[in-house]
Amino acid sequence: MKSNFLISISTHSNDKLGELSFFESNKDIPFDFKRIYYIYNVPKETKRGYHAHKKLKQVLWCPYGSIEVLLDDGNEKKIYILDSPEKALLVLEGYWREMKWQKKDSVLCVAASDFYDENDYIRDYDEFIGYSKRGDWNNENKF
Ligand code: T46
Image 1 (tube, rainbow, N blue to C red):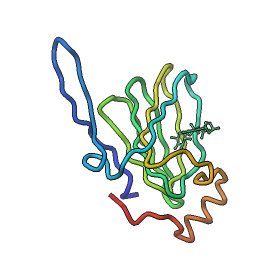
Image 2: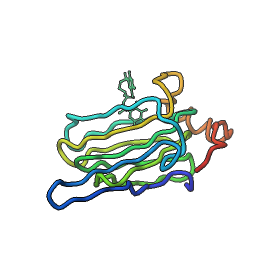
Image 3: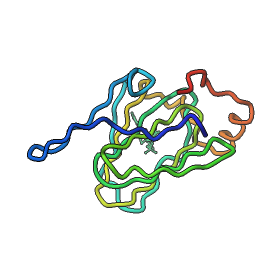
């Protein structure tokens, strides 16, 4: 699972004013962002996701709280914990994902490489395994 990475987000800290974290497309993150969305008001222990994307690349971060993200490439499963505003997770195409809210009021933010398109989703696990065995992913752009 070499192509998914936890990224350390650059942060300016000031004892009196607090922190400011930032990242830039095509510099810190290897694609252009076309869409931002965020998920909030999710009860603790809730699980979301259960799908993969055929082409979409995303970066996930949790500015408040703690969220567990399971990534599955069809062979290997790996768990990442987003529990700091200074951590981001790069999730390229072709990974089944499941997110679990570990704390009340945790917020998941996502910057995505493309507009919303339901046709890009694979929401059936057996179909995902079929894709992954055939190596159908458009993933020339591995980071
Ligand atoms: C992902 C994980 C991390 C829209 O209409 N526009 C949007 O931009 C998005 C992201 C979703 N939707 C609709 C589609 C569904 O009817 O909102 C509804 C909930 O989406 P979904 O059940 O896919 O939410 P999650 O939390 O399971 O997955 C989301 C993203 O959809 C997905 O791309 O990688 O967050």
